[in-house]
Image: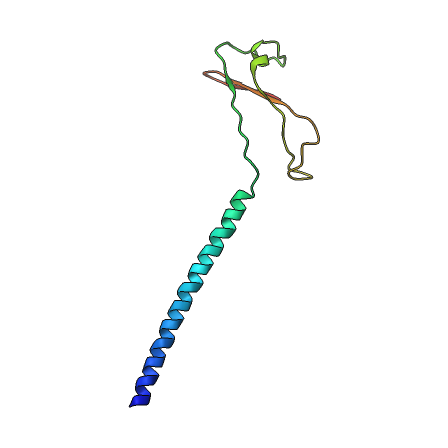
Amino acid sequence: MMKSILQKEGLIAVIYLKKNVLKIGFVFLLFAILAISSLLVFSQEEIKETFGLKIDESIKVDGFLDEPVWEKASEISDFIQFEPERGKPASLRTTVKILYDENFIYFVI
């Protein structure tokens, strides 16, 4: 009788131990996933943004930048390449200017 009670109590203790090990393992796995994902997020390069200049005058799309408003637009030029060497500075210098009005967005490349 005593032996069967101890066996039952031992079995219960083993079941509780297995449940605790599973809980501890799950918590450890959760923390590991969170740590790895935060490393991936913070290892990404800075995202740059720019804004076009809103204009009220009209632009003649003729291939010439003779309107004075183009001088006011900020110039974007720090591009990086995707191929052949991803993330390196662009091998050819490229500049972009952006203007917009109520109807259109104008790009100069």
